[in-house]
Amino acid sequence: MKLENSFEVAAAPERAWELLMDVPRIVPCMPGATLKDVVDDSHWKAEMAVRLGPIGLTFDTDVAREEVDEAARRVLLGAKAREVRNRGRAQATIESRLSPLDAGGTRIDLTTDLNLSGPAAQYGRGMIQDISSQLVTSFAQCLEAQLAAAPEEAREAVAAQAKPLSGLSLAFAALRRRLARIFRRRSA
Image (cartoon, rainbow, N blue to C red; front, top):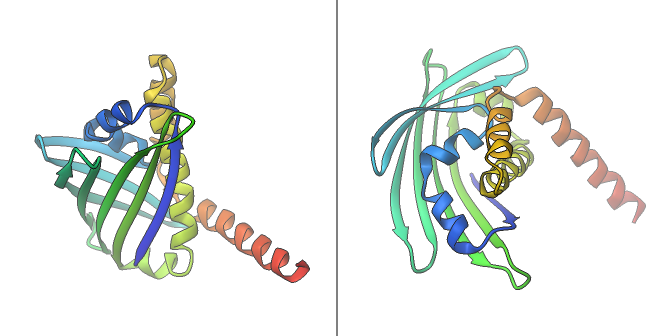
């Protein structure tokens, strides 16, 4: 499945690119993710905790920087994850493209090709796009705080992401957005 998201940060493209290339600093910005090991400059091991209602899943994840085009400010990351109790797998490629904004700041476009199996695929079917949108919003807020001048704000933003991702709360929020879209179409 292909997911496309965009967000803007109030930092120059050079600063945003520098942060985006520092994978150990951005992994903790993903809700429920914890960096476990730095293998080398292009490979990392992480853990991702996800709650889908009563089901808690923990994924061991290998992250690799597969392509870098510094001139175009484009980077491709690959992630392969296995649920620790062998209840599913996930594989993703995440392409990030940065572009300057006319009013200052940077736009970051993310394109994710995602394949899921097991309970994550079963319970997430139909809501993955909405859940992805919420994850990107949370991720963007954390990156924005990382780019802020105050180190205290950055630490607080990263700490806020440490709790496991709750699929149930994300699913309810996604359902609310879907219903709102349906009612807007009917009233139009």
